[in-house]
Image 1 (spheres, rainbow, N blue to C red):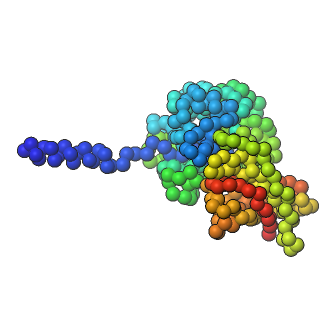
Image 2 (cartoon, rainbow, N blue to C red):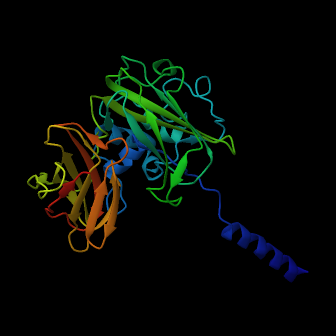
Length: 346
């Protein structure tokens, strides 16, 4: 009997150890990026340490701790049931009332921002670290909102400007780039700084996710400012603008190393339209240095064949007006170098 009891106990213990536990992290807005997502990007290093250099991000981590960056995809309430005003107190909307993320409620004009155009259509992306069915509700702040004060429910328009009902998704859960996506038209007649506030309500449980995405309506096409990288940051190097060979459409591209560190770097490519008419769609191509690999790319999509990278526009930055430009960025392992980027458009 004693042997049987021990065997039963060991089986129970093994079940506790071996049966996977429920995931505690699920997703966050990637485009336009949430505060937690951009602050994670701001401090990401190849050594796995996260040391933000953006002052708003640094202040958030000082209050909430490093876990709020390592788990940037976990701003949630298990008892949320889609509730907002009256459930989450004023001044705690960005954390969803979750004390582990209270630093992201701090008022600060230095939060990383996404530059957008009022009334334009963009493709929203929401990371699915753990996939769950549900609805996404998008709210926006009222005119005159001040980033130097904590967000209250009175600062937000009372109804969502868009609702995504169980949208499509790509990628495998548990990865940084796996996401839900949908197209939406941004509110018209908005200018200056705002917050796009997203609520992800699961349809299979009461769990609800809350995100603040800082944006500025200034005619931008999704460019991001306020996000850096930890580690040595030399002065950016810019390669000359490259004009495509005759016969290709009139777009040009320039490459800039934003920052670099031991084993990796961040770069940005600016795609410009020097012509007298708008272009509709663009493709940028360049060759990575030996041993280099792209880890993530934003404001576009990309494929890699050997060392050749081909980046294409997203839906929302497909069109570039005459004399206009758009940018996309990426992080990669290896060394940046100064590659030549060619640009073509249909």
